[in-house]
Length: 78
Image (cartoon, rainbow, N blue to C red):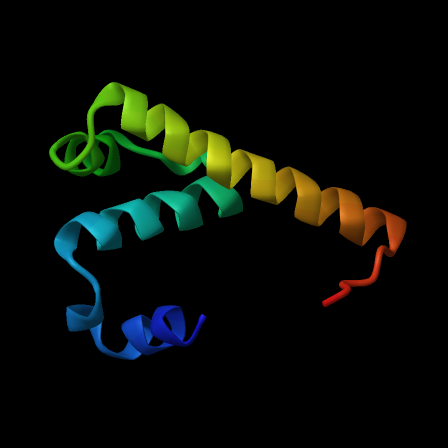
């Protein structure tokens, strides 16, 4: 998490490949209909179709669990 927060201040923390994956995750999480052709092209230049499906699946799964737990008031345990 620290690296993610630091990367918001200093983009050199992440590779270009990591940055586009993080951008895809952010856009997909906030408004999945906003994954435009430009983002898709940049994503496709770093990942093949199978990898993109895996990234989308992970993002979607974590979004599902977060929304499910939030709606039910499930508290985070460590």
